[in-house]
Structures are given as structure tokens and as C-alpha cells.
Amino acid sequence: MQNNGSGRRRPWTRQSSTDGGGGPTLEWAAPDRFRGPLERAHNEAAHMIRRSAREAAGPVRQAGDTASK
Image 1 (cartoon, rainbow, N blue to C red):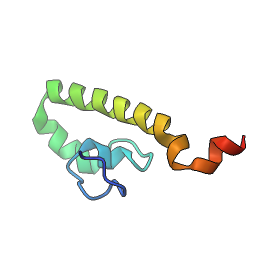
Image 2 (cartoon, rainbow, N blue to C red):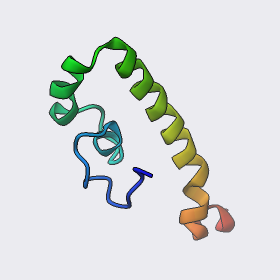
Image 3 (spheres, rainbow, N blue to C red):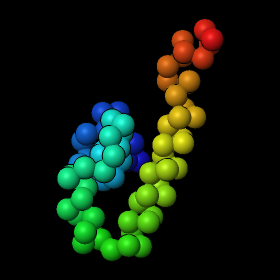
Image 4 (cartoon, rainbow, N blue to C red):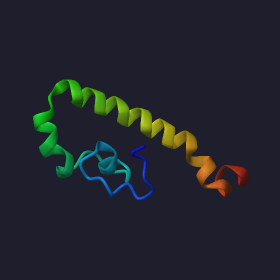
């Protein structure tokens, strides 16, 4: 549900900080301090799941890439 195309629309989610390939930025660091270790662990796991899902979906979105190889 939070997966928007630009990845910059919702700066308060972890996804927006990581969509562009950069790690957690100041955008996330400040709220993360107040969220506690449990939610941080969940967000890191969710980020890894999203990243692997994004890598799996990569060839589908860029149709020419794997088809030409």
C-alpha cells in the first residue's frame, strides 16, 4: 500500500529513505529514536523484504533488461 512510484512522497516511512538506493537518512533517524527497538527491527525486516521484492520485480518493470541478456 505504501509502495508509490517516486518513493519520496511519504518521508516518514522507511521505504522513502531507501527507495533511491541510499541508506536511512536524517529523514528517518529522528523519528526512529522515538519508536523503540521493536519497531525499528520490524522496519529493518520490512525493508529487506521490500528490497528483495523490488529486486524480484525488477526484470518485470524493466522489460528489456533480462529479456535481451
